[in-house]
Length: 311
Image (spheres, rainbow, N blue to C red):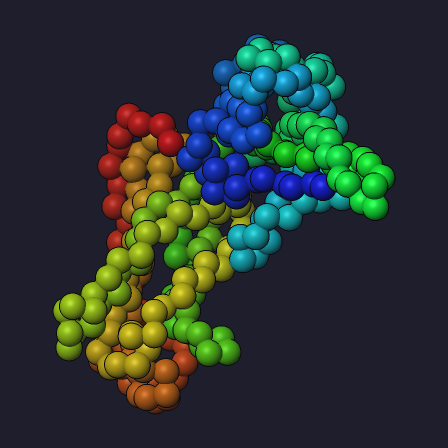
């Protein structure tokens, strides 16, 4: 009897935001997990880089590689595309080797070359997946007969590849901030727009304050990935203790670095009360409202500071 169990171990945060420098599972490490290519820093129409796959186990492991197109939907969820879109690199990428064995405590260098697209300036992307297959055999006694079961466990590692072509920019803006009820839960919803033509990695926090009881105050860390030239909805659940009392305020503060490595901060805040009571918003009453619109929220000016740092 043969069974194949596939476990896709892809962390969106590590994969897209690049918060992990390597991925390690099943005795295999792949690094780096994020590669950025810049056509303006290359000579000619082709750019080459490499990825290292390392086997820390005591068994030989089989590796198969493939490329995948992807995007994020309007709420920031990762979607794999069946067909490449206009921002995909998979038809412009060649890598070698595409299938190989790695012995115990050995490394394999996988080289790839990307052809610079003919399309407009901006961002092009793909994921280079490495699929590991390691066979395990179990012998089970069943009615005095040996039943051999071979199970293949497959683990998948993803390396995100970005290519920036021509003149590129990052410019994130909070366009709307609201408090919304969904079923029995309450969320702060921020509409965030990226006017730039490459993605933006946002890091920050949501600060929840209760003017009646400072002990209820809390901060929720935020990491968010914003696709180029789009508006996405970011939703953060608000704890129940803030939805049952009046005199609450919510402030969202997000940091990022623009293409010139200038530090920028975008922020917005709003006052709110309980779910089924009057909701005061900057001294403007929205009777029994469950949503606060942008006209009743305070948008905080952008902070800019140039800093020599990569993210």
